[in-house]
Length: 291
Ligand SMILES: [Zn+2]
Image (cartoon, rainbow, N blue to C red; front, side, top):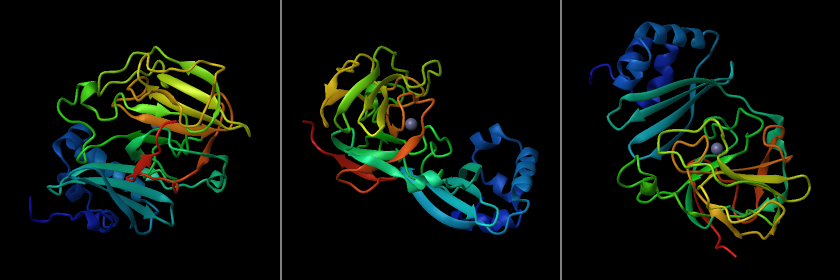
């Protein structure tokens, strides 16, 4: 396997050279189980058509031993995201579009604090679909998914046990003063690695902050929410706990600000933060204490 090995930083070159079979043979078994070599070569050929050269734009690591690479072709606006394990095997290849939107130039009028206390990790967040899988979708474009880590890991022990996750049960606080306009409290937390698509937000809170700005906190723990619809709350007030309800496969806190009360009818807005720069994927952020 050492011979002819593609180094992660050379992936773009080999892709442009259409060395697709060689790329495929370096993928892990799970990847090959999900796609045969002919299908991969076809998909890669189609995707590569009309492109110039893929340049390495960014790399990062979200979990120990796995490194992600963002390749962008500026001519066609196409993007490839690859992930390599520490053995140099390819564990994922994703073909995508590298787009940006005019809404990037707008930011909230209100400023917000982090909706938590203590140290959290930005799993998804930023103005780019490499950094933030919410980005292509206008309703959630500038959303964040936060988790907690200890020694670089999101969980310790059994990965199928909710209590193993450092985020599970952590306090969630109001990101700004406002009035609670919507609450769901009693959706069951999913077992890790399964999702509830019937009520995607799970347990959630929507707060009106003025200037037509509403924050949404989702996937909270069943029965942890301590505020009611209509209640006026303070910035930093404890409002619930991080859970794994709704469209969430492992415990995390989803946070976004939008220009309306209905998350399916509103557009997400870039958030102006009160005391930190705009966080993005891979950052570790410390929330202020609760009030
Ligand atoms: Zn999310």
